[in-house]
Image 1 (tube, one colour):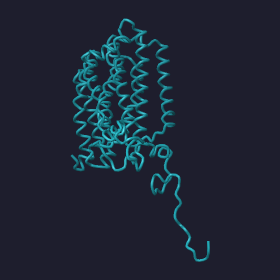
Image 2 (cartoon, one colour; image 1 turned 120 degrees about the vertical axis):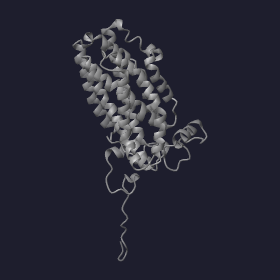
Image 3 (tube, rainbow, N blue to C red; image 1 turned 180 degrees about the vertical axis):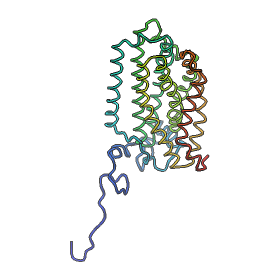
Image 4 (cartoon, one colour; image 1 turned 45 degrees about the vertical axis):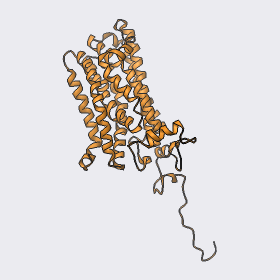
Length: 348
C-alpha cells in the first residue's frame, strides 16, 4: 500500500452471507436448512425451469405462491426443536429402541393373551383400523412439505411424515400381534371393512378424503396440523392410552404414550409456524381462523364416531359425549397457544 492511500476496511463476506449482514455465526441447524428450497430461488420466473405455463409451474403458482397465507420472509421461520436430519435420526433411534424394548418385553410375557373383552374391543375398534387414517395423514404431510414456501417448513414436514410412517408401522405390528393372540376376534382381517363401512369411522374417512384434495398448502397445513391431527390424536392416542390403562392394558398405554411424543413435537412446530405467520402479517390470523372454522365441524364429526368406540369399551366409565368434549377442549387449548395474542392485539 502506498503512503497516503486509504486502507480498504470493507468487511469480507463470509460463507454464511446468505443470511444477510448478520453479526453471529449461524447454528448448524440454520446452515444445513437455510434456503435449500430450489423452487423458491431468487430471480426465478417460475418454480421449475420449464415453460411457466406448464402444469407443475401452474400448480405451484396457484396453490403455493397464490395462497391466501403469505409472509414477507418465509426463511425467517425456525423449528422450535431446531431439528436437523442427524438430530432427528439420533432422537428417533433412541425412541425406537424404547419402543422395540416394549414390544419384546410384553410380547415375551404374553400380555395380549390376558386382555379383557373390553380392551380387545377397544384395540380392534380404534387402534388397528387407524392405519388407514394415519397413512392418509402421512401423504398429506408429505405434500405440504413438498409445496411449502421455505426449506425450514419442508424440513419439519418431512420429519412429521416420517413420524406418521413410524406410527403406521407400529400399528401394523400390533395388529399382527393381536391377530395371533386372538385369531377369533377378526383383528387383522376386518380393518378395511371397518374403515369403509363402520359408521364409527365414516366421519374420519370423510375428513381424510377431503383433506387429500385440499391443494392450497396453507389450507392443507391448517386442516391437518392445526385441526384434524390434534383432534384425532387426542382420541386415538391420549384417550385410548388412558382407556387402555383403565382396562388393565399397561402395554398399550406405554406404547401409545411413546407415540404421543411425536405428536407433541409436531404440535410445537405447527403452533410456532402459525404464530410466525401472524407475526409476519397480522391479517393471517383471519386467514387461519377461516380455515379452522371450515375444518372444525369435520373434526368434531370424526371424533363423535370414535367416541362411541371408546364409550362401548369403557365398562360404563366414559360416555361418547365426554370423549368428544375432551378432544374439542384439547384442540381449543392448542389454538389459544397461537391465536390468543392475535385476539388480544385486536386482530379478528
